[in-house]
Image (tube, rainbow, N blue to C red; front, side, top):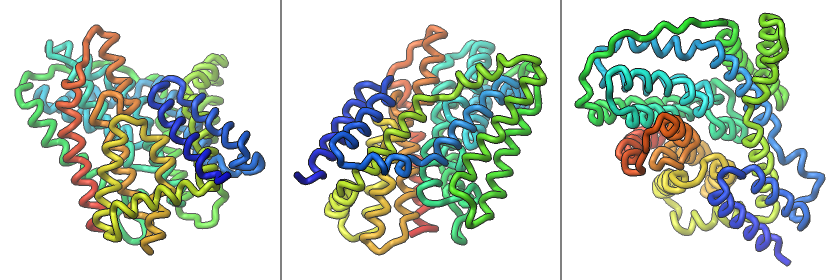
Length: 424
């Protein structure tokens, strides 16, 4: 029997279940991986090599360091300082959104929303305005900037690992401005969207709060992680797990330091609980599934479908990849989508005798921003809405899309055009 048929069936069933069972995606992915192994589509011996351990270590280590960073209250202090220099609510919302974006370029999007949203709520309550659009603006901004750096989002880590890109390569790659600048072009354009959407919010903002930073070491460690990743980018033949070891090593230093400082091991348990093990297991399952799809020839088959629809024009194919990615990521989590499509777009580029970077960057732009269209398109959106619901506010889909749709369209268009200009 042709292994492509059962592989495709497993893949389709997995994707449907990922949509239906959003709280149990890790179980669905691991079950699909087990099915590939039981049906011998993928040999068991290929499993260790299929999982990208560098990605797993990078994510786990970054999550731990970010937890210490949040506990130090440094993000709140930074946000409050930002509010002190804003003239009114309109600019305060823009400033908080941009601040969330800058933080999320180095910190997980969900963690960013958890850090910045309470400040947005406090501002809204102080001036007695509706906090719903404020929190939505913070969430969509954090999603956008997650694509800017190697450690900004899971999808960026996936792209960097698959394309063999270091931290510096997200800024300048092969003699050209890279994905960071494409993201920033999109972010700058969204300022005009936010200014228009909040044009009536002209009340004054008084005071920025008095939060005290409890420990500066986590900030040093987070900056140290970035510096070491930058340094590591300069080495061509570094070990495969270098970035993962850096992230985990800095997290371990932070945990040991905090245990000594607080004279107790309770912090180790808090950090351990903060790590999103379900996402790590989800990725492990997806890596195995994708390796199985590749072995069965499904990846090449999907690439051929794109080629039949898009033809031989790089411009049409690029637009198609961006638009399809936006459409799908509006309803499907972008982690499994990007993990699946990275080998597909590279196969398309190889068939067209092109370098893969244009299509890969277009994939990341579309998939990252597409989640901003709907409330369920990204984990950061769900987190923001959850915070509002705990406060007793209802968030209608139309309220979210009123901000998400124009935000997505202008940011995606700006980033995609910039990428085309420099990488076509």
